[in-house]
Length: 239
Image (cartoon, rainbow, N blue to C red; front, side, top):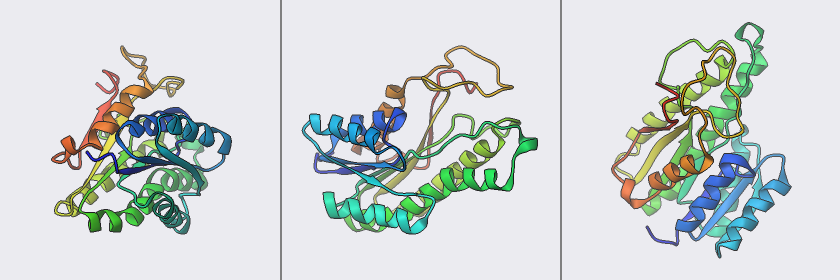
């Protein structure tokens, strides 16, 4: 893949988002680091990228608002020239008994996990289609394909399953455009905690680096024939 490619990673201030952004720096010319609240953390991510000799800057946006998501894409295109790789990493989890969920809880989970990706995807696609090359990777949840009962993460699981449907639908729609759309789904990651009601199994704890490597592969030319997949990086946790 040409090192002239540019990537945007949402929610890249720390944790998994930072690991993905810094890893993608090795195969691109520049990375835009998105954040919502923690500017200092985002600036640290950008600093780590610039240490590798690659361009990077931070940009704030509330991606649950369509206009802000569209403006984010425009800002990256203005600063770095294009958006070739989009990683939709924003997606908070809510641990709460389903009997206590409110309408606001449902709305927040769907907007943050699904609509944010939908808005960014729609805004980035025109440029990718024009260049006949693009990579969109959504960050999911390892059990999104398992229609099971998870009493304490109901809204989150529903949102990530919706994101998987969006991923596969968009991948089919873009089949002839040169744009691939896929999902990488982590299990329980370093620093995380197990939702109540789920059994602790072998290889529960995953590393950010493992997920980042999967994202980098799907962002490469070598993955051009992989479309609409859900690449699960969770050891044996989902089994």
